Image 1 (cartoon, rainbow, N blue to C red):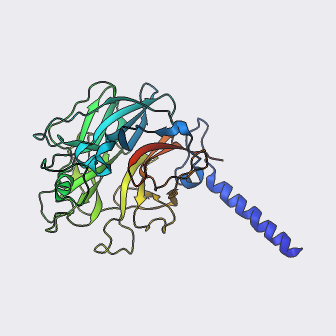
Image 2 (cartoon, helix red, strand yellow):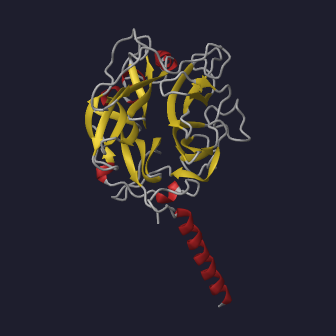
Image 3 (cartoon, rainbow, N blue to C red):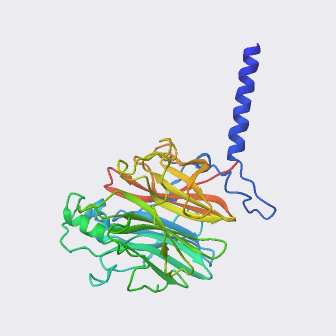
Length: 376
């Protein structure tokens, strides 16, 4: 009897712990009191069919979602012809816009934002990795673009040396507008370029932008960086951070990589993190990253949530696991691949939908999904 009572007490204690980990605290107006206690992993619900954004003719990737000034929900996403295969994103991706009345969808295609404008421009071949942000009444769209040498055969693979020429021309740009459904102001120079110093961590290419604005108005830009090592592929993939006083820059780079997990060997680990989504809440910065090497979640999750006070020094959050390796749909099925390209939609600070990109049939096709979030 004593053993039964002990087991019951343990179970009840475990239930209380789990419940408290999932509980979201808000103030009187419904605003989140603290992001520190948020456990995204436990909040994820099965994905209904209406929350899948797909197109039979295109591979879809990179969903960046925000609530517009008009109350509509906008998804900025990458797409390229499905017939060209997954790796043609490097040469044929274009950034498009979709819209929905509800945060989880269904989303409907509105327009292509950036049409191809020719190899004479730094962003003339492909545009990819959109990251949208609202600031002072305007919409800002940070993105990656390539030029390449024009010799890439289709459908392509990473085994083609010309693929790497396109990859190495990636730079980061920004566009601005008053209404995302109308014209965007596009610039003839990237907002963040590679460093001129050949020994710098980002001397070969920069990509994967993630942006936030802190409580003092400082713009923080996190980006993927690759250095030169005498090979076409370049060195290990890492992330850097740069700061600016205005959304359009200029940006000042921090000299050292970020997202460096403690105890790792830089030479042996090709990539630690990828696909950051970045935001600021109550003077603290947060990021969701793909935990490529499993350093932040000990291999227990595909995405990790990290925190920082300055944008330079990052550590795992109180609840670092942000998403499982396989997502569950309302019909009971599981995704074939782990999600990539995270984006978190919040209202009054409270997480309501977590977005990601999924590949199917060994990336014969891909689409975006919106994971409903629920707190006890």
